Length: 348
Length: 173
Picture 1 (cartoon, chains in turn blue, green):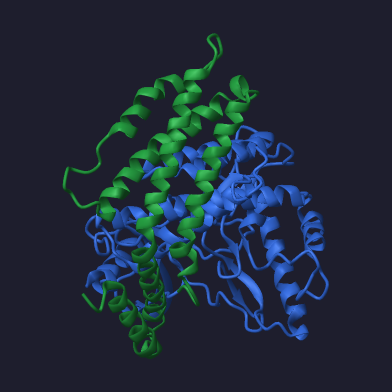
Picture 2: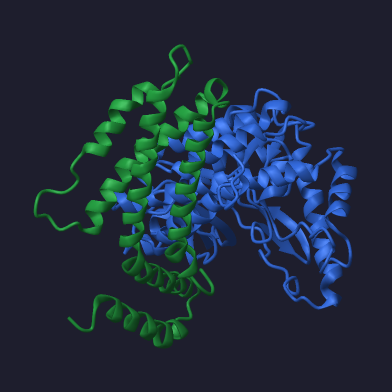
């Protein structure tokens, strides 16, 4: 069952090829990371010339990725972030040599950063953990400010991603990109999505103060923490050039609610002001709300993309079926709700 | 005929949830086990509800497409029709097509094919109507047709909710 394992010998050969001076390589342990749906992540403990090293291996699922973006793009994003202030696990190499593929799949390797995706206590609703939640949120907002302040053009992100023509067209350009991408792999019509696109276009904000590198999925479950601080920003597979508000719409659990409940009264506007002070970028609640709807369109894309390997018979993983059904439904409902489709009193 | 397929599946789900899932400890396998449980519940709900739902979808989409044909026919000469007229033949084709051979059982797969064909042309109609909004949007029939289509789409999502949302419970993965 090659799809359930990593062939240790082949991985060792890949290490010898890419790590200069590595002569004696022994793979001690390979563990599949249980979280995450879109791709496989493996933790590898390896003895390289007597020294123990820890790597992370990323590869697509046997039938491809959940996200409609290539693995190489994720690696190239990491590569361009090397040497910036943004904390990441250092990317090491991308393996596409047919001799060393793992189960016939390309993969890339990065250094493994010591830490964990979760911080104990975050989920505990007791007030004594409010300060922890607020601290984590502020740390995360600080790191996002670093990402958004990068000079994305000089770092070469414009070569990786199709940048909007301007800040004022960022939302509209993003819709057009996503619509074209969906059409490139769509296997059945989605008329509720088509109907909702009109609302998205009619309501696209034109007041973004800038465009920047956006991380995509971010927040709890997407970053690596050590001693209560972010030591690596992880999971860049949905990165793009966009209005920074886009990242706030992707943020998982670190953006406090408007009333600051469970964050010691430190509310959403406080968080947006905190970020504004750090970055100089204003995030309005209107743009944030809009990009949350646009997030539903992205959800439609990745969930419908998950149906492809099932339809082609190239992968049968149950998670794909779940994403392709429930998540597609959630995405469609998110769009339909914003577009007024779900209202009995449709005013159109 | 007893137990029926749904009763067998319900029995399998109950047994799986009660005896198998609690015993799975390896994190990845545990995650997959939770997902599989939900997928079984999803399939069970589809077995029970999807046939009627698709049947109702087809009825509503046919009505929308017929209304589109009437709308196109009534547009006064000289108005910009956009791409709507070019869709008329394809609408007629989709409405007039036979999706079942004589004597053939209307299986879920066959009626799904019919629904997909109608959805495809409805999707194009929506695009064409959106594109002609500036030119035709001031007419009440335009607004009425758009509302009819939107109502049809809302009903589709409401029907799907039973198996794509309500049937799923607890942890997903």
